[in-house]
Length: 168
Image (cartoon, rainbow, N blue to C red; front, side, top):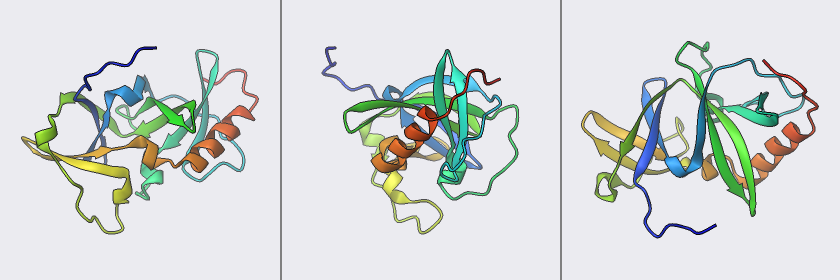
């Protein structure tokens, strides 16, 4: 597969509570409506379980819980962003539950500032920049840092060990 020499500046933005986050569109495969998730025993606390995505077992994590935010009930706006992440040379697909997808924005490099020290509320290691937009700021996430390689391997292994034939 040939890589493009120009990098897109498109970001999918989503909300967790009142905060808006963005991920580069190159990490996003799909956006799904919230569906029933089958729990996986002994999985990390933020892993809600797995779903059947076109015959593939997809591990699903709650980004709120991963960030240490308060758990809230799912609403009609809650959705799953299917991410494509590379871990140690292997591609891992993972579903990320977010409160609401907002939009796709073009964010130029000049709009991005380094992340500030955010204290304990968010781990700034996940945030590689703050994009200045009309209404304020969007925290730009590197999903590879949200889940380190060991955690993603654990999540993927838990999903692979789950014998799920049908999840609705």
